[in-house]
Image (cartoon, rainbow, N blue to C red; front, side):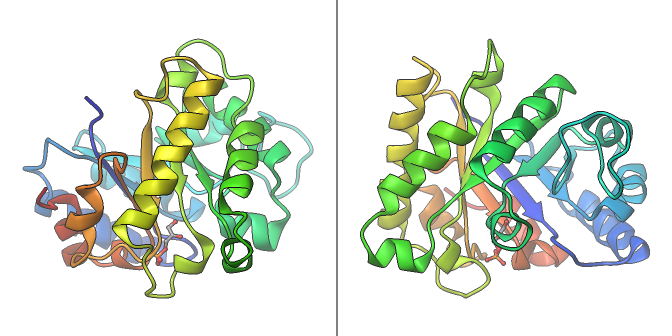
Length: 250
Ligand code: 13P
């Protein structure tokens, strides 16, 4: 059985005080949730303050990016061991905004994914097609390339615990959600490709859907057999809406 995972990607939002306030409100609101794993990913500057709020609760901490080296002359970067030190157990990798604005490639995604595992962080590897790619009918080709190249050469249990997030770029922050059928079709495809890469692991890994997930569409998305959770932007910035997502009804 795959335990659902509801993850909030706070992106570049909130001061340290605002982040701590949101974490505090969430921790009491979701303290009774045990059937769903809950993850929040604040900015780097807020990690320590959020960790102080949620340590020992049922909310896990994640970062939004990392660099693959552990220390040295890499000005401006944050290492996997630093994230671990800050209390993280997860890290987002290869979000479409990082691919689009910061030159992230499948190759860098693969290096970061392996570096995350080396520091005992669980990577949430993001994939997804643009509107142009969907309209050209190359969605499956694009996704297959991202999965095969971004997730190659994982060893042992790593292949079984990685999390993949399917986020169609055209659905992010636009209010346009992929229909449950559209999302399910791609999720099932990702699982098939992944199982071809790592025999038997396809059924074990969690595949999250991201792109305008809101309280009013979460249940229908989560009813799809291959959707194991959500990676949520806008609706994770408010305690009430993210609580509703964490408490979605099947
Ligand atoms: P929205 O939920 O705001 O569409 O963002 C999705 C996303 O990019 C999460 O990583």
